[in-house]
Image (cartoon, rainbow, N blue to C red; front, side, top):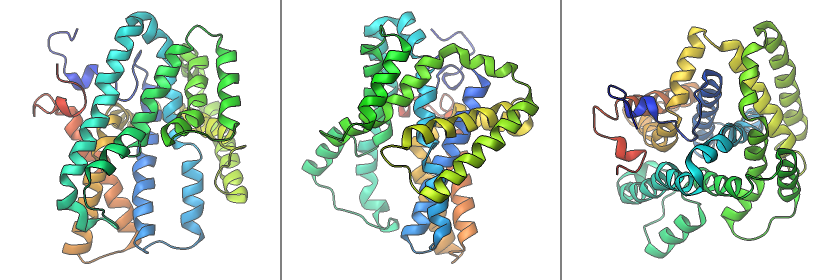
Length: 336
């Protein structure tokens, strides 16, 4: 139950649930900014505003770890959540906080499609059959749908030893892809959830690591990550697990360095609103891009990268923290 005086924004854990950790929230803040930036950069590329090797290097580096980091932190407190809630309430909670916003925003996006389609690089007219098939296979918003099923797999494997769960997840992940799109996504991403489950509450030991040591570790791991993606390109079937975990480790070390710093405090603020940013960023991003192009008549790359990324991060976060005052909680979780 929510104690009197607490807001939904203060008590709901976006995307994952469990004991509150500033370091974990900070990692989510860093990762969601990279998600928004990655989508902004892809929009610039599709419009021909950013071409050349710089785009590929940026994309390969970011996409080697920013989504694995989300799956990893989503697994950290899963076992504790299952023990507290029990299987039935655990599933119900994930339906309300993950599957519900996935379905809701699929409907919202389809409804707004005709109005915002002219601002998109490509737009396909609405067809019920296509819409329902996209919803069913997770392609409307693959992350939330994949996360939901990964957490169900976590529930089914909760009694396994942590090392065995992770080993099986790795074997499945590097096996040839099969089945539907969503099955393949779960096949590839569950290993990061399993890694988070293995670490669990030990993540709090990171708070004891001296910041100077964390800074050195971050520089070394980040340099390795950049070199690996620079020389070998986008992670493949055999390298994506290792690079996903090393990139996540770099984010965790950076989070420790920034913890309690004013920059870190701001990133914690962003991280706690990560669900709202994930769901709403595309609208704020597209609106900012349209204003820059139509009103200010500029396609300057830096403006088109930085301003849409900034507005698509901050505006949804404001909505998250004002959801009670503005009666918008139903956007992010089942209202009943």
